Length: 371
Ligand SMILES: *Cc1c(COP(=O)(O)O)cnc(C)c1O
Image 1: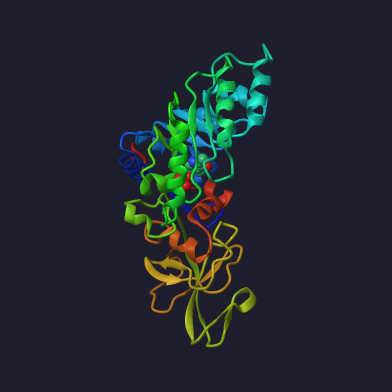
Image 2: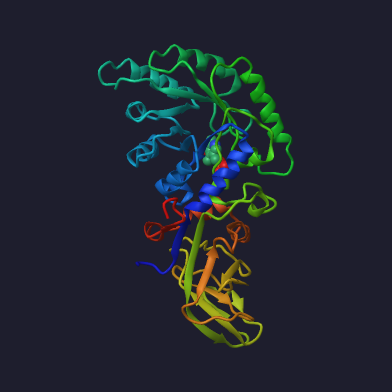
């Protein structure tokens, strides 16, 4: 083992969360989002767990990620959210049956050039989705560009005639539904008479809004993160997909007035026991976590004190029974990742994606269907 911080991926929890998404989707199909290495869980570990639980497809950011899923043996449908940037990526899409999102007109220009390069292009048809911007103003065609884009794609002999229509929500995680409702209304107007599948929902929209569509695209909820900026993951019966744990490597006394760690950020208000745990920002623990960030030692709730170092953190052991070698849970089934993220001024998505390569490479997968 290279690092002492250990990442455990709970495949049973991922499968359970997929079931929760299926329940919320009421018969709609699911593209389980596995981009960014399965939100840090390992793309293939995650995809296999979701496949076993009945996901109909996967959503990835890039064609390269889609090709990796195919090489890993996944046969479900694969939606490539950013679509293609080059002709080679379009060829990869045909080769691996990846469904490509067209969110910018330059991608249709590219497709028209690519399909005219006879011989250089593998045989087969491309499944296309058009992403329309209904209010997020990130990726997506403007509504007034939609009809022309559809016409151009439908005129491409290499494109499957059943073209999908999708959009993405900017504020589905907030308690006020008005922006999301406006986006839903815009989408419904644009989708009138649309011949082909539709897709709108991320996790927050799937759990919190009645947005419809043929395919949902949940991500964070499948990993046990709360998709909303309020409440908790357990409110939705979601279970932690990843546990980041380590051990105490020292238990020490700090005198009253002693300043702990770099910069002396925490000053002991009394003589107190302090634990040193073997995890730091080099493992993916957030460096900006302030004093008071929740953490568990031997299952007991306590807090981070002092600045996060590269390989170590310091924790408050007042009232905690602990010895060197004892378990420290940074986040996982006892310590919700959302509480850590909130304390550190970020979101669970970022903490999951930030777990370092060394720790991720040694992740242990538990709860696999075959035991
Ligand atoms: C990442 C992503 C999703 C999944 O979002 P979550 O908030 O993780 O559920 C869905 N759709 C698109 C376009 C995305 O980029």
